[in-house]
Image 1 (cartoon, rainbow, N blue to C red):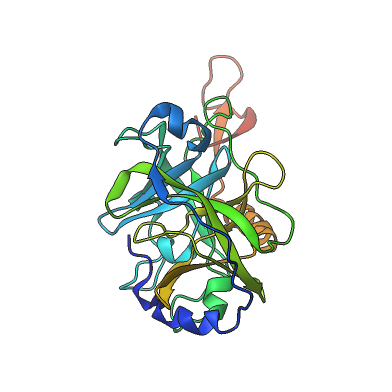
Image 2: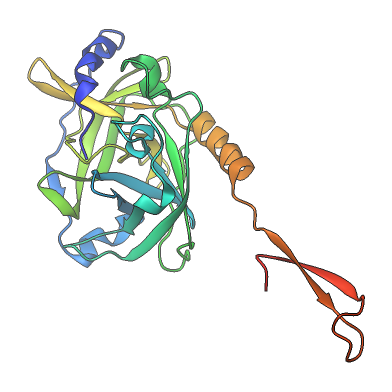
Length: 274
């Protein structure tokens, strides 16, 4: 899926962000063996019907974090149906570590797909997808969302993208080049399909998700990608998902006394029916 075409306006965001880092970033590398991909298999490809794909990351056994623009139909400006999406976790050479259908989609309430692309859309370009069946933690270990403030310095990005759609790729080190008003700029190598990709900080051992990729541009011959501060947005989305989670329909069974099946008996209410 595209790294939003209207991202050209992101150059306006760059004018708000100062202090470009000078440290060296590494090249993007495909994780072509299971051993290479092992640590990162909770990052997966979120397939959206015939519209393409984005990158998403497990943050709980049944929750995938991605970009809000990934879950909207660009033609109708409405959310895709859950049944149109699947999540292929840790896909390596076309083979996923786990494959799940999607049961629920929630984009942050602050994201408006009908407005022109601007800084506010980057700030709120976050969505959660609930899987129909959780992926057990002994199979894949979800990543934690970083709770601190993202400052300048090294990060890494794991993603799928055009030309590398069936295998995870990782840039071991790229740089946070600025942060302002909850928008984060990085010089990471992203492309179409990388929307929603996790930006990892490694300050506390295992990588934690500091931001996700909303889009990118090229300025002065240099690739710049944009993300957002996550903690408050993810907390909002979890509450929103719980509030909107479809509730099972209760059905009533009557159990008669003795052989008279039509007699009045106790009622048992069973979620989902039986």
